[in-house]
Image (cartoon, rainbow, N blue to C red; front, side, top):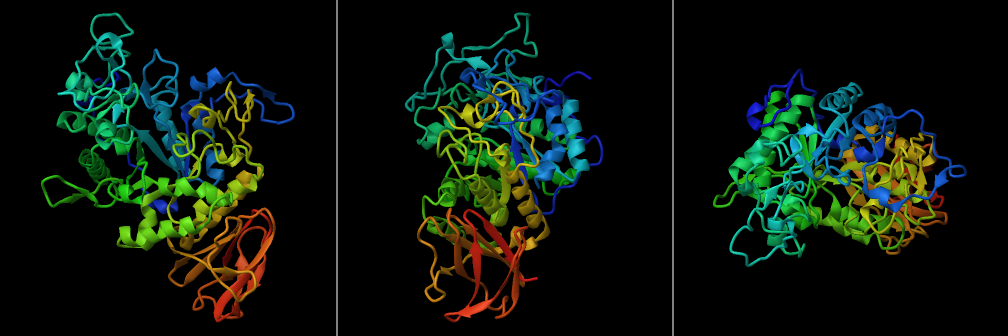
Amino acid sequence: MAAPRSIKDLDFTPAGTVFPSPQDWRDVVIYFLLVDRFDNNADDIPVYDPDSAVHGRDPRRGHLFQGGNLKGVIRRLDYINGLGASAVWLSPVFKNRQEKDDTYHGYGIQDFLQIDPRFGTIDDLRELVRQAHAREMYVILDIILNHTGDNWAYPGDHPYYYWKDAPGPFDFGFWREPDPAPGFQPDDAVWPLELQTPDSYKRRGQIRNWFNRQEAIDGDFLSLKELNITRPTVLDTLIRAYKYWIAEVDIDGYRVDTVKHMEATATALFCNAVREYGRRIGKHNFFMYGEVVGDDAVIQQYIGRNTRMPGTSERFPSLDACLDFPLYFILEEIIKGFTSPALLRQRYERFRTLYIDHGGAGEYFVTFVDNHDQMARPYRRFMHNNPYPAQVVLAIGYLLTSPGVPCIYYGTEQNFDGGGDSDAYVRECMFGGTWGAFDSTGHHFFIPNNPTYQAIAEIAALRAREPALRYGRLYFREISENGSDFGHPIDGRCTLAYSRILDSMEILIALNLDAQPREEYITVDASLNPEGSVVTNLLAAGGQFRVEVRNSRHVLRIPLKGHTMAILQRL
């Protein structure tokens, strides 16, 4: 079958019965991986051993393709599922420019209708989705609407930079054509052919001031070329291209890149069109979440029915959720004891003013502690220069027991600790290659008996079992050392305690953010936990505790070793 070249070639009829969406995406734990850096499907790679591994990487290799592919992801689905993750978020798999060897991340698309051959084939993606669905797992693709790859040049192939007073778009230069044969060949220009017109692009030059809203929307993202998605033909092309992938391979959701650089109206129109298509074919809860780097006030404009149609009083449904950057900006410092947990309480208090149902606000957020961009703290993972591996369990444990759809970045479960002067240092290879973790080469890191992997898996299993951990209202709890004077902790090295309450069920979570043991009284709901009732720690560490009354409040006295957590429930 010939590869489609135009959106006119596309068929939107699903190949078979579609896999149903989850009823609620908060039931799902997402695992995010970069395809090129995950697994290359080779059988002869030894497991990493810090005492025998080869160390010393060539820094140049971190910016180049390493050889990870879709078949490698397929063979590691059980590893991902064993961690407790039930969805796989893949970095973009669409075809990038073949003459370039540095777009391993996939965000510079040359053909929206093809899989990059360095990652595999469309049949490989179909098989990945089929095998994931057989395990009751979901597959989410990372997609781009904002821009294409560096598929054309400005006149003279010179760098052009944004000029706010420019009277209009800059002149178009030429399409990049590595194949000199007459007419556009598959590796030339951009596909589908509907995007092969200069007017499909804004042509305003590269962004210089990333904080200027208009420049950030109209300018090119570095060398990547800004699409003019306000043009109906461009937006329709993208809508059809991404409907095609749902029909062809039965995808379950999209993560939308660089949303803050796009017009809100066009974004909402795209989301609504894809959402309605999903409902028509039987995917009634097709998930679309976006990258919006901003605070809660900015994010809430993109979710629910908060996008206004200009010139009308109508609000339009846009994204289902956004990546939780407001949480990301503060969580690491709180877990490490560098700042007060008061910032967490203040953050969730804002939900009460931003959302009608603050208890359900968690459905609008995909939460994370590590990612591939590191926008707040270039460029390091959570474990970079961190001597306390137990802290990463506390961080992921918080995601798994707090509001939101939790997302685990590949390698975090193996204590990856990358950091350096570029994003390559937080994009290590799980299969080793020439850019393995811990400054190593040629050793893989798929180690299910790693204590961090096992601890995360245990907490994820509890989340799957207990509805309160997924849907419950969140209440931060006051604590006391002496049983008389209660208050929220103000020092970073403390016991962070909070409850998730759903109907008549309360689950109390307590995290010791101190390296030293702590034993404090923690407030619980009096009506749900009568005096004398017994509460059990659901984690393997175990232990039972009796509810006491201290200073007219019902409390539990919980001993915690340094950097450990307890998840407590009255059974």
